[in-house]
Image (cartoon, rainbow, N blue to C red; front, side):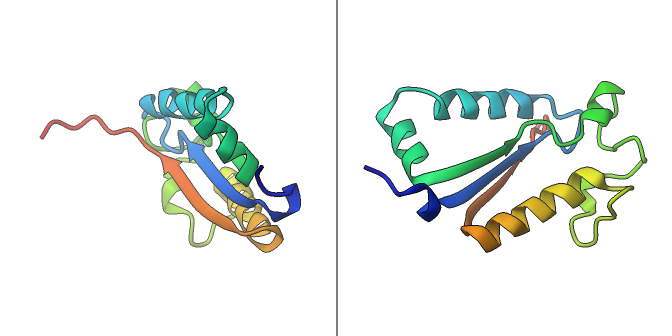
Length: 120
């Protein structure tokens, strides 16, 4: 079953645009583990979609212990409208990849995983 590869729509998932949201890494790991698993649901998803997963969109910020910003001092999640190739490289390249995927096969879902710890 499933679609021929050329017919499959795209699903894009990213995480850790905000370096301090460490729980997003656990969420994306869980997603990857699920998608690579043997369940009927995982097999069906793999047969119907092409997944593009960026588990750590802001590795420089993560490595340097930033909470929201990249090394440039910018909050990358606020640069989607007009990202610059050098100052906002992760967003610039992900946005280009999503646009190319949309042209080539269509994107049915873009999910940017975040993790907040706020008491209500």
